[in-house]
Length: 284
Image (cartoon, rainbow, N blue to C red; front, top):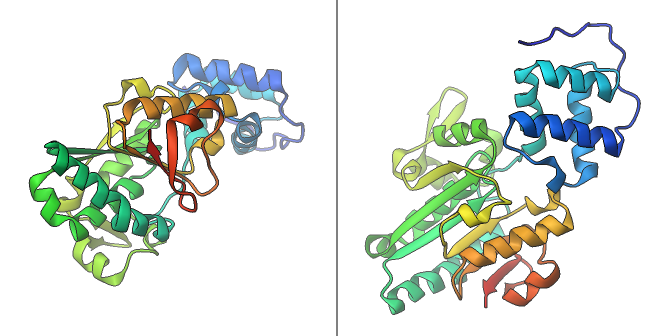
């Protein structure tokens, strides 16, 4: 049941306290697969405040009552807390580094070891722009390798609706500003004001709903891309996530972080830097 809001309810003024944030997180975790305690409090308070203003709740207590009565608001809060905005080929220099150095090395390792499978995992994949960018990159520059090495790309996000949207593979122009005209012509088909990826690329990526803090549930991968996601987590949970990523990477496997992220704590001893500018690391 959705509770109607009174239109003249006063806007939110008071800041959300730590105790109020904990209560909101407890209510949410009872009904939805998300643990707010692993995220940075400042970020969570800001995003909860967005929902409180949208519902015109005057304080956290009123908002907690709304959450207890409204499955719709639980869904909207989860989406607000986990939203990630992305675009195709975000930070083009990173994709160029993968093309010129990283992927040739990974395919070479597969050939030398007799392993005919290469697995790529994108954590916090949002609407699928990143794994699909990798698929296009592979199709454009590694078509020969794709014929001999089974290449599997997975995209994982915690939000089920986001995963559903990623599987549709349909995007507005704002997500495609770094896609060249030749790539647009080859891999996208216009559908009204939006553009849909061709099936050749869609079929290269498998999307799964999953929690980044529980990487033990993920399959071993040769390349893990986790960009602009760790910044939302506490330092303790960043280290936990990175140790989990290290566990699913083989020796020589590659981790890519976002430009504003880096290895933290004891996990640094498990990697060596490949390209500090692009935040690319190799598992030791």
